[in-house]
Image 1 (cartoon, rainbow, N blue to C red):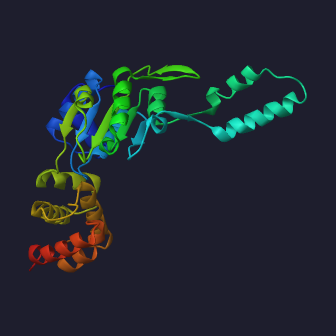
Image 2 (image 1 turned 90 degrees about the vertical axis):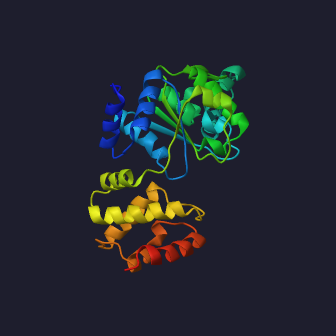
Image 3 (image 1 turned 120 degrees about the vertical axis):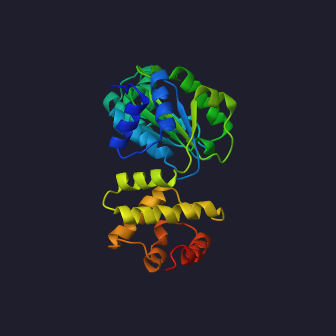
Length: 293
């Protein structure tokens, strides 16, 4: 059953562990009601992919994920043929036919039966509908792939020459994410509802941490988030920590039995928070000041 209001969207997402603000709940509600793709842009680690996962869980729908990368094309997104099984099928035909004659055209057609079809994410989402299709990091693909996506999202159908047209009985819920490493084309953006996801403020991030990791104490959660927010504000890190890193760091500290953040424990657990040596050096220097007694 579709949510009847943005407030219900927010409540359902919170039930999955995803905390969102009113603006994000509203755009999700509109995307569901209008059956329009939702394009989420923002810095890495702000919860774009997690939102698609939470929507799928909240709606009790299967999640089909297409991870984009440089050089991806329609074949990787749509379908392929199971070549090894086709070869085995041909050998079986030869063994059964023996010396007798077999219709060549009939044998060729049998190679492209649905049992040999390997459905990639886009085709799988159309066939499983209703489903949630996550097109992750679409900015890593090229212009040609964007054009392909635009065509599919305009009709929610694809044509397989050997089989025919596959059309979704119900349009899938489509979520596209972008880290904005390049600008997407206006044509694709026009097809979507758009939302920029920023890093949450202090109180919201504390709420997220307490929701996703309730085993972490209120005191430790607030200390962790305060430090992370301060590190993001510095602006000199190669990769500022996202919400995912906040969660990892808090869980690591909790696993070590930490109830209140101290300099020594913070410094030895930075592998959960930053992923570059240069960032680690900068963060250690910052912690000396941020956690100084």
